[in-house]
Amino acid sequence: MKLGFMYWYIAAVTTAGSITDIRKKSVPVWFLFGMAAGVIPIALFERNIPLMARVLGFFVGALFLLVSVLSKEAVGKGDAIMIGISGAALGFSAISVILCISFFLLSVISLGLLVIKRLGRKDRIPFFPFLAAGEYVLAGILLCR
Image 1 (cartoon, rainbow, N blue to C red):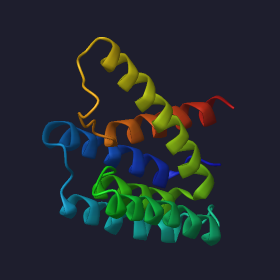
Image 2 (tube, helix red, strand yellow; image 1 turned 30 degrees about the horizontal axis):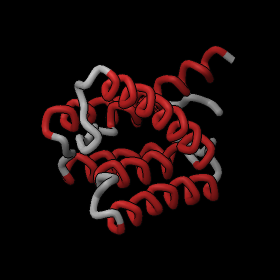
Image 3 (cartoon, rainbow, N blue to C red; image 1 turned 135 degrees about the vertical axis):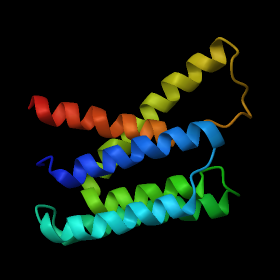
Image 4 (spheres, one colour; image 1 turned 45 degrees about the vertical axis):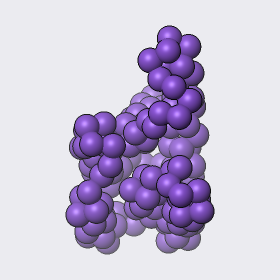
């Protein structure tokens, strides 16, 4: 996978969204729509990701949105929309790896916070920063190959 402008755009926007998610525990809808609007023109110029991979990547986000609705937002809708946009932009394989890295980092940090009693079992943790971290870790892996 080539790390084109799209990848860095998604990583930068996710990082910006992380700041809002940490501060307010939510990400505004206008932010997500703005991100989606930025993805479309870039996708027209960067055609190195097959259309089917983009569609499958989008459906990963749709699956998370379904989980969000069914679980009464145990997974935030903003997180699900972000995953869908990222999946449509980067493709199925990239979003799958990013999610694996993100969930691994989230579990390690959550476990650590539980052990030192800075976090309770019912507390919510913003997921955007872990998505951003997953994107940067994947970028590092791909750049080192």
